[in-house]
Length: 91
Image 1 (tube, rainbow, N blue to C red):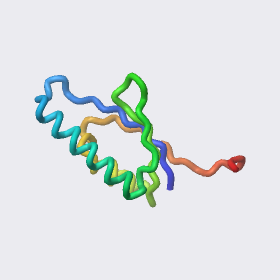
Image 2 (image 1 turned 60 degrees about the horizontal axis):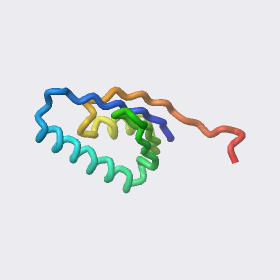
Image 3 (image 1 turned 90 degrees about the horizontal axis):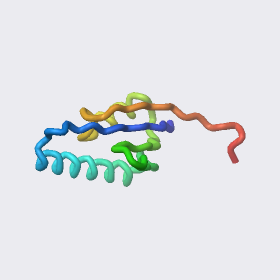
């Protein structure tokens, strides 16, 4: 199943810089792991925002929830999920 996901990140302004760097580093490592596994085939930055649009390819809603909640930045994200279906006019 394909899902279009918008993730907006909102880290606390008073977060210790070392904690922030460690958290962002773990997030990047997890994102790369999921991309290499083929379940996160598209990742796009949204210009001017701490946000992204992504396409995930997983077997179910539950699998997507498990994947998203495994992200280190999950507690600091607002997430909007749109399930996708094939369009009849697509080549």
